[in-house]
Amino acid sequence: MSDVELVILGTASQTPTPERNHNGYLLRWGPESVLFDPGEGTQRQLARAGRSASSIHRICLTHFHGDHTFGLPGVLNRLELDQVRHGVDLHYPASGEHVLGHLLGATLGEFLVPIRRHPAEGSGVAAIAERYVLRHEPLHHRVDALGWRLDEPDHRRILPERAAALGLSGPDIGRLQTAGRIEVDGRTVALEEISEPRRGRSVAVVMDTAWCDGALALADGVDLLLCESTFLSGEEDLAVAAGHLTAAQAGRVAAEAGARRLVLTHFSQRYPDLEPFGVEARRFHDDVVVARDLDVVQLPTRP
Image 1 (cartoon, rainbow, N blue to C red):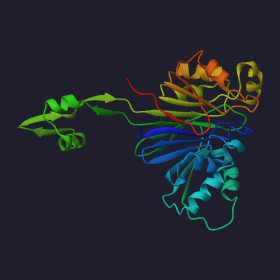
Image 2 (cartoon, rainbow, N blue to C red):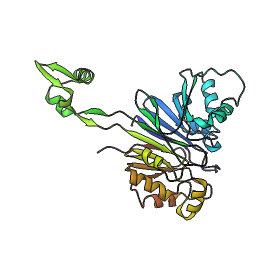
Image 3 (cartoon, rainbow, N blue to C red):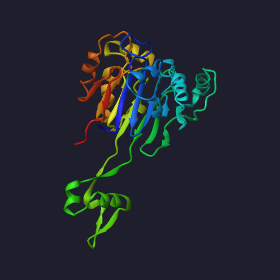
Image 4 (cartoon, one colour):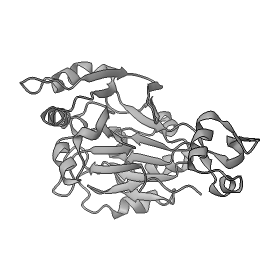
């Protein structure tokens, strides 16, 4: 099992349905998780997915519409109930600071979970974590909105056959990865001799937006693109008016940006059948996943 996976907690847009919860996306990256856009019911969806809220170390909000934020107080209170004290980094559009204040003050009682606020705007780096760099780009919606992208640093992949040919064992390989070169039987062995460059993995989250440069920048060469697709092409006029993408446009974003896997979500309640979303997007991109609540999506394997 990969140490990076995306858990779909909800796929509805403004109005949830009996089958689709409000938004919510849990990205597990190693031992920690990043939660994106916790809509109403996210706490229960975490339980249904068998995921612990205590794994959440970072929460990213794309914007402050209710279907992307109404679950935030419940998730934070669950962390308090579980006596989580590692703290949570909270990233969000700076213009919504006053709304965030209302959300954080939605309940009474003692609250000891450390919340570190990180308002953001425009393009930039939001955080440099141990395993990834978190970036943001502006999107084009009816309110200020940001998309998010996580990039793992590039590294080198050990080639076992080369290591074996040089007589290197596990401890030797560990020392070589740390030092870059070691002495083996009177010979200096460099890390480059038993490894090859490997580009770091990447995940992008593009929620409520019309077609824009920010969406393309976020999706550029990404391994997995989670992208809103509120409408089908027959309602493109509604998508334009509401500041959303159609499934076909999401497919075009993925294709033009060179994203490897596209995950469609944020479906309007007017569509009980989601299969046409995949059909539309696949006109432009081959690797398309139509997300459904509680799905677990893996990054595509590397050649």
